[in-house]
Image (cartoon, rainbow, N blue to C red; front, side, top):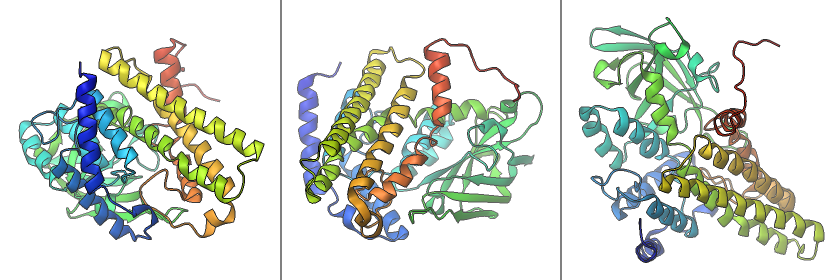
Length: 393
């Protein structure tokens, strides 16, 4: 058990380091997508240098081996200092690392993990146009030819794929048995011949997501994770890293961003508007509740009593309160928020409430749709009857 004195010492160390190194003025910058990616790389490498980029990795890695309580302190201080969220390296440090550490070969770990800490970035090639929430319905095919797999198909919603060096790729290598049984997990070079990336221009001007087209792309068999046909089980290790601690950090960030709404209330002379104060008070209470649920999730994990569904509670609560937060900010910001506020790429609580509001809808889908999370909570936590399979309307 990590002592309170140790945690306070760590907090002071992190806070002192961030006072010197935290990026300043990034929320007010009118960035191009390329400049945003460059700034993200620079900030990640600075965090690696400081020892705060990968506290969730094992102890043999620089800055790794932190307890969950220590990780919480680091996330809280990054939020307090209003540091940019690490969107570009998110898949690399969470999804790719979790996959390699749990399921990768020693050769794969030795090759790819050090490269991540030097700035090599990963994207995720899971979802397809007709295989989003039903991921097992994917159709991108891989045929083994000697020492390589030849891959053809399409992926979509791949975050920051236009800047990625590598890709966590799910492909179909078999059609017998359950859908999950024929899926294989590959590590693909995004610079390989036959890979085409097309950014998706979003309504708020961002290009966070991409389509990826694969035309006879060759992937070495040595870059298969696990056995052929066992990719579904490997993917569970990948996805498990997306919820929980990540959403705990996001919940703290949202609560820390309440001052943007308070500023709008003062700016527009609404300090005595009973309706506005009521709505703001309810929002603050809801944000506090989201953080409390995240704290309980962390306490359960530290105590070894985490339940299947705990992370789903954090995810659904956060995504709902995020929508309420951005909707109130958009309402109070009036037309200025729609026309004058600069777009800040890569965050969810930017202070640009038109962009934040539109982005908030993605979070009821990303990382597992709200409906899927409700099924997990009802069936796995509450013991309710499982949803029947094969029914038709």
